[in-house]
Amino acid sequence: MTTVREVMSTELVTVDPATTMVGAAGQMASAHVGSVLVIESDTLAGILTERDILRSLASSASADAARVSPVSAWMSTAPESIHPDAPAGEALDRMLSGSFRHLPVMNGDTLVGVVSMRDLARALSKS
Image (cartoon, rainbow, N blue to C red; front, top):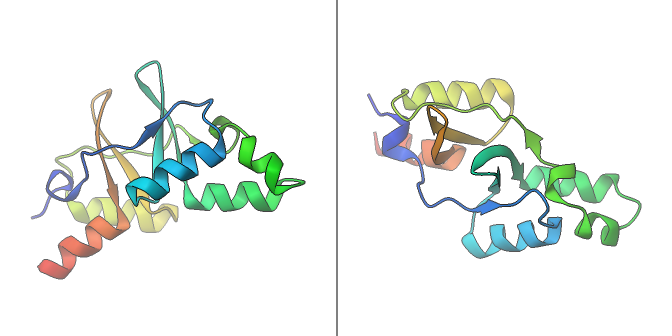
């Protein structure tokens, strides 16, 4: 049985809640990832995804307003997470039932990684 630990990424892309949307988008593009983890006082405060960026652009009066908005205005707060020793299939089930593609991996109160739908698909294709 493949665990989340075996497929998760430990190279985390993080931002502060005050980071602008354009700043977060730039970090995501540079790192070739679809989400950033929002960290406040060494604690996971939320997650910002490509979908959140799209939602901010669609909901704002102008693209300029969305670009300078802080990620805290658009991030998902208190995101669902998973333990690194959980089965990869459990992570997939959670993502499918919750309609999201990124899942923070927590060992207690410590953020240790992130697993994406792509990570899980790669693991499944190697099986």
